[in-house]
Length: 395
Image (cartoon, rainbow, N blue to C red; front, top):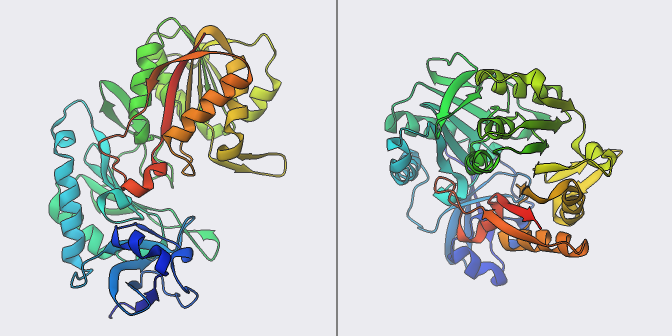
């Protein structure tokens, strides 16, 4: 059945953006968009004079109505298109495939590799395809076939990070190969880590934190470490393996505690010797005694929290949160601040850190600052999508 094609007229003020390959398509770029209905339909983007500009697809997600695919008018969006895009991305990761110290990395990173809304991760030859919207999911057959033809794999799984009629999509995540016996263990720079691919949306291992784990392990020797918003505890494990004296991990979910215990037991570390709290990290910070101090504080807050009792938006509230964590860090101690918020870039993030210390009339020195991960390329116009992180020492 032929795929629906919608003509879309681009506003005069946005023509250069489209010609330059602006990947994210949002309604403000178009003269009108209310005629767009079918997820996965192709969008033929033109000027008001019907001059061809680009081809995209319609797929609503948190930001935007879809993604640009090509600026070549004769380019067919078919099996060959997806195979070529994925093959180029695989070639860019040759160094990772050959690196015996890293079992997990990103194989395809959305618009940074030419197809927004699609990511593919490798977990020790188990592959995970994440579809960020219903539109890209409509190309599932072409994407899976392309991947199967290009790689040697143990298995292929999928995650659908979108909702249909306001409800999360349910179903079997397994697509091809032989099912893994999860949780399984992989190696990351000699650090064994647990992961799951068949337990819903969460894998238990954020591969985007690879450099964070290495940095924590490097600087944790002899430190009393506080890990706020600790999730599955991989940073806690990295701290202990780096020689931390003791750790406190704080996260609101029982799942987080259980996963942290799993990670520690994997390394023959006694979870009972560490403090693992099931508590809202915001509450822990608010309730901390003035004498509560740590040598090394890690803070990785969510980008957005909106509940009856708390509203937190990183783009607005992160400086105030940093101020609170400064108070929890000994003078001469380390503070690792990181965020996945996609509403500002690294430069603005660093300004937030500076603002927080300046407000308290405190000084600091930068010990380490994150840079772009080679397997997480971003389109030049999408730099805000990169994770931001900095390790500072409080003076």
